[in-house]
Image 1 (cartoon, rainbow, N blue to C red):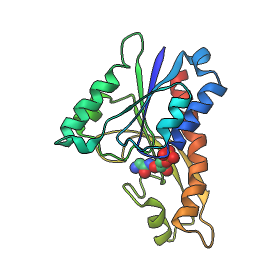
Image 2: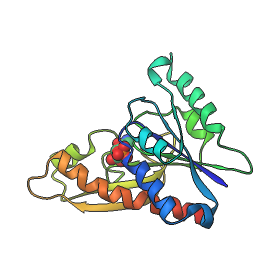
Image 3: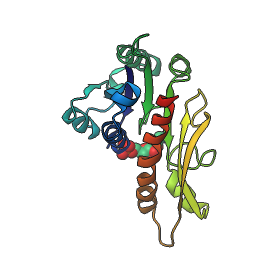
Amino acid sequence: MKNIVILISGTGSNMAAIVKVAQRDDWRGKFGARVAAVMSNRADAKGLDLAAEQGIATAVLDHKTFASRDAFDTALAELIDRYDSPAQPLLLVLAGFMRILTPGFVRRYEGRLLNIHPSLLPAFAGLHTHQRALDAGCKVAGATVHRVTAELDHGAILAQAVVPVLPGDTADTLAARVLTQEHLIYPRVIAALLQG
Ligand code: GAR
């Protein structure tokens, strides 16, 4: 069995999309893979309830209770590593996990660590991607699934989805349009990786 661990900080709609497709397409039977746990750095992340309702293990590790970024990442890695063994290798999926990870953490999971970012990378790494795309006068926007490397939002691109920017768009309307595409491409990339 392969263990997928998903890290979230908020709504968890990408996580929910992955869980839904995993069930619908029988990832357990097809790929020997399951969403084993959902973890959050925020206790109020809405996605945690949804994961629990699906019978998925959840954990909260509040970053504010740690003295340093290193200490938080070390504790998080300890939690994650419970889901990693030769018989049950780990795939670590960042889905709206709003924390910058230390290079040590990224190295530890290199090659099995994915992220989704709400822009067409390499444009608009970092925050406020939709407002920045609007301010730049972009005619299209989108999302990118990529491998995670120590440099923020710069790992190898695995998939992208493009949406039009429409007249009258606000950051919120554009974000919503992009998000619907995120829900399609993220599960698709994960399935492709599980398939090999
Ligand atoms: C998504 O749009 C995701 O691309 C973005 O946060 C949102 C999370 O939504 N991620 C980042 O900005 C990472 N830098 P969700 O919690 O509903 O999946």
